[in-house]
Each structure stands twice: as C-alpha cells, then as structure tokens.
Length: 169
Image (cartoon, rainbow, N blue to C red; front, side):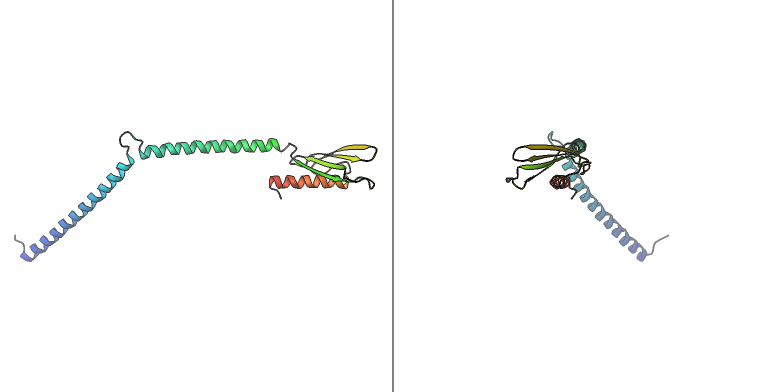
C-alpha cells in the first residue's frame, strides 16, 4: 500500500510543525528551569554563610519569642492596673476662707480617692484662735456624713481627675 504523494507531504509538514513546536516548548522549559535554579541558588547557603531559608526560620522563631514576651508584659500591665486601682491616686485640694473676718484662704478641704472614688476627705478649718480638722470617709464619690460645699467640690475635682487619668471622660 502506497501513500498518495499529497497526503505524504501534508503528513511531513504536520510532523515538521509538531517537531518545531516540541523544540520551542523544550527551549522555553530549559529557560524556566535555569531561572528556577538561579532563584534556588539564592536561597542556599554559600561559603558557610547562613541560607535565606535558615535566616527566615530564625527570624520567625525570634518573632514568636517576642510575641510571647509582649503577651507576658500585657498580663503584667493588667495585674499592675488591678493592684493600683485600690491605691489613692486622685487628689484635689480646695482652699477657702472659712470665716468672713479672716483672709488668705487658710482653710482647706482635700479629697484623697482611689479609682473607684473610695477614700477620705480631710478638712482643716482655721480661725484666729483655733484650728479644727475633720476627716470623713468617702465611698463611690459620696459620704454618709454630710459634706460641706468645699468638700463636695474637692471630691468632684478628684473624681474628674480620676476619670481623665483612666480615660473615662
């Protein structure tokens, strides 16, 4: 059985095109392989130096360690905040003239409060011949004992200072 010369020439052209296409694909694959080898060589260590992959792994471990330290510091800050909440940190003093015949604002009321508004108010009333000092307990910003206007003002100022310090406007 013999092939028609026209079919044989078509088959020869198709074969040549397929071979040429295979050759182009092979050249492209070799170029891609060469680029990948160069990129891979950059990742490998040279002359005893640390490889890129090893450096990334080391830095990743360092970052994880730092994250643990930051978490520990956050817990320590929270613990300190809880401990300091009971400390007297909010103080306000109001000076005034308790008596009309005295000048110089020698009398005062001082509020000493913690974050919850608990603490005390100390008042000193100064006259010509005597001085009286009073202390009144404060719970949540108010007192069971009646407070003078100056004592209420001192408590209010201390509470506002506490609200500003803790970010509670």
